[in-house]
Length: 169
Image (cartoon, rainbow, N blue to C red; front, side):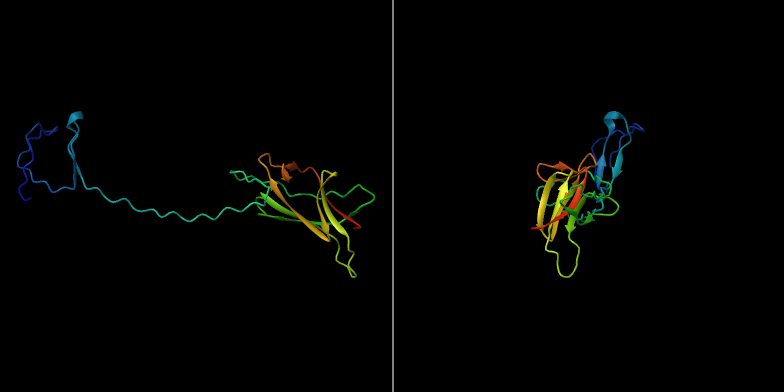
């Protein structure tokens, strides 16, 4: 293609014919319809962007819903039981993160003493809802809802107070 002859093209800038013009260009864009200069360009291959792998989403416990936006709650506080027939146990919380608490596990246990006390450990919510009761130790999953309130169970029960109680079997 040493002597490629272009068809009769009018240059919009010079209004001159461009016959016998050698072309060794990758792409030609002729914008004569709107009176712009003739543009010659090589189509470059765009760089390939390799997406960085995302961390897999944290699996929520059964019956707990995860909202799409990151929502964080304040740390949970244990309320002592006001039932004189029950004793207070030892409550601990494990959070999904200490900076943004979206999920938590609440664990209620009896004191470790010898001989073992052999008590039942239970978690109550809002001073009247027994969520779970087990020998010695019990745990339940908690989630921070879109209103930034802790909840548990299905259907979800919003937690205003949470207690760790111990009782004889």
